[in-house]
Length: 395
Image 1 (cartoon, rainbow, N blue to C red):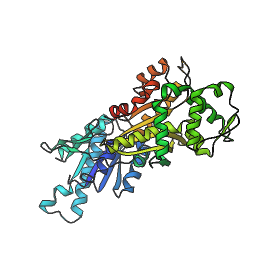
Image 2: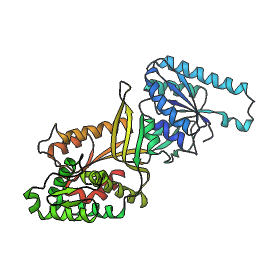
Image 3: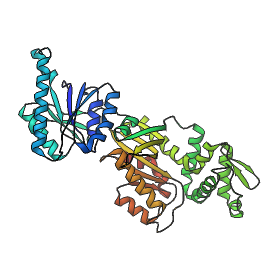
């Protein structure tokens, strides 16, 4: 696309303004942000991402995002200023006229912003495009006859989160060691037998957070053949040692892994396999620690178990190995769903998706709540089907 300047309408949804700016085939050299007072912070986030990638950013303020006449006047003033800017410089040759044009991205902003800017650009016979939210495609609204453009999947997780107001402190992207992949596969394949032993080990690992040593094993634990088999596998993998009736972890990483981190790694490994098989996953990470600003401007710490970007859409996965209580309508199950739903909305925008992966069976009330929130679930006996569930979810 030859237009070297884009006008973006700043709103709560950063993705439609971010993706065309980062596709080399259509990226502008300069972006102008149409910003209302309540969107200044959003403009800060977007500007930081664009400037870091060498794109010049300017702002054109409006006072009321819902006043069509005011917005139209301000956009007309902008277009006059752009024409004056071109006249002050060296006059472009005839074949450079298109190169000097400014294009409107009509996707963001309020409806009045989009309508007013559209009408102003039509009056000046300038290009206008819209980013299709489902198909990640740039569609020309004006002039007629220009072919749509499939936007390249160039956005990375850190930039995506930054544009939505989050600062990534750390995340992991390396492949999981083969021995741990094998252990994770064994745990999933034997979910029906290991559900209770895994919940026990999860609880013991949680109790050992300070000392790396579990409380004494109870007689019922010692009599459980599958719990003994689980411990043996973990000892063989050098994640545990057993001394008498106590289990010890060699380090915090091993304790975290057996406290549920293994499921996070398993999901991550499956997604890596899907990407290698041709699934359009452009970026993938796990154990993401980030800070975002709350409504008071204070930084709030959040964690994401697994995240991936596919076709410029954010997918967030929450992984749990704990047992759930039947009738859990306000307890940890509901809390996990609300947390995931909030993060999906805050960090991914309207097109983001969330999934809860649970080693244990989920109560009916939690399943219903997940359905109400449009959160995908793969839990309990269905866990061996996780590969196909992820494929369908991304597809």
